Image (cartoon, rainbow over the protein chains, first blue to last red):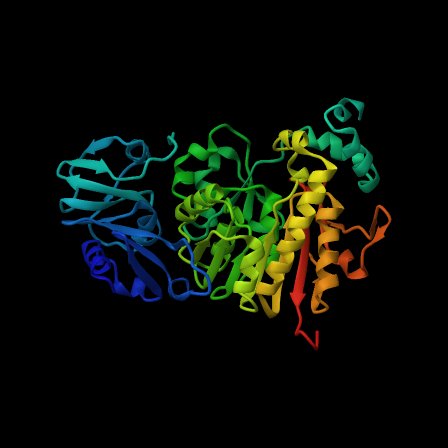
Length: 137
Length: 314
């Protein structure tokens, strides 16, 4: 397992077994995650394998919203639950002020049992790291 | 009928009034929008969760697939939180049929030869339970960007996106795919309900041009198929030259191509044509199916299910 994946797995308390059947690939500061069969495929050269898992910066590893939407359901720590109204505000780029049982740093934002995306928490401010999308109402 | 006729090119009416027995019904329904439908994305949500999220739109299960729902048509469904979360995918009902007929299984190797924008790709990915290898190819850089966006939002971990000429990819993947979907670019006559712009681009020469392209794509898709594998050829158009004619072309090139019957209980489909403009299609082509907009309140489609036999034994 790549060290960046291990780091995020530990931060969010995701059982490493979740990644058992998945492969990872680091390319230009981005880690991609996909089924192992996708990673091993070499008959033609894909322009993309699976989805982006995280971006690697010099001093941090930032998980992506799309990867966390599918894998973040296994997270057991550093998750913040918000209401639907708060989720919409975050998707639309706003930040929230709240007290959460999470460490400072990247967090998984959840709403009604589903992962909304990734945020950055520095108590008490939760900043959205969700990619720009069409406005959500 | 006259009130609808004025929207259609004369040549279009001349062709299809002969081909569609209930042509008046066809014209009438193409003047209305098809029912809005969504597909549950089982990679992220259960059927019940989606029903709960869309409760105010009166989701109604469609009789032919338990993950397809009709909803009340309202503005801005694509701006809803549940859509952002990828819990459901807005997709015309007829466009869900080719993957259902293809019936991909977990762990298989599947090629979606003309994949963008990805509605069928994401459906196939979910049907494979996010396992195995789904090669999603499209030749256009612009369309591939949209495909990647939909793969991300749907959470597909089993997709390799390729940007290649569809005519070429079959040779590179020769005999290696369990299933292949060739949802070919076409004149889109079946999507008139969505956009009457289709009629502005419509011409018999466009049909002939697409037909040549489709001949290449169906052959390429067939090459990629392993012996015993299954291929679905589909279009969202009515023109026999792009449908029965293309399947006939494949059969003429490959004696080990076999057209199989298609059944989807609860969904009305019509048999393919046996002749068109003096050309007789081979008997197995009758197994193909036509989906007309007036039968299920959808767009129009054409479907062929083809099995690749062993080169010698069939």
